[in-house]
Length: 93
Image 1: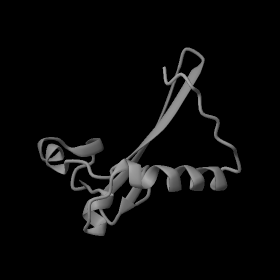
Image 2 (image 1 turned 90 degrees about the horizontal axis):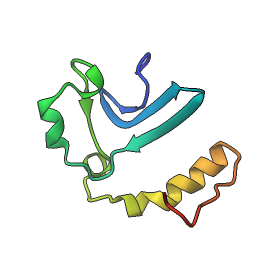
Image 3 (image 1 turned 135 degrees about the vertical axis):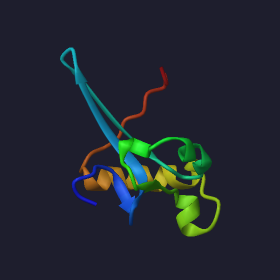
Image 4 (image 1 turned 120 degrees about the vertical axis):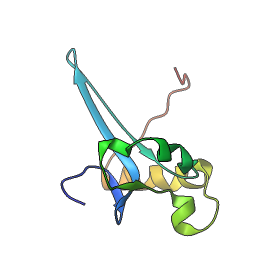
């Protein structure tokens, strides 16, 4: 919900989005909770937002959803939304 960043299911964040700028370099990323152990969030205030929760695709869909299940459709959607072609490096480092 505005003004909070990320993707929300009601009052629970399912995807975090971040941007960092420093030394003339920008980096950005996201974290989509697929089958995350959400009990770890019981010990913190997620994203520093009191009264807000965290959820996952597995919790919302009521079945086990792994990263492997969502990676290809996510990347396909990313290319469509941002009208781009993703290029993959042979060297993951």
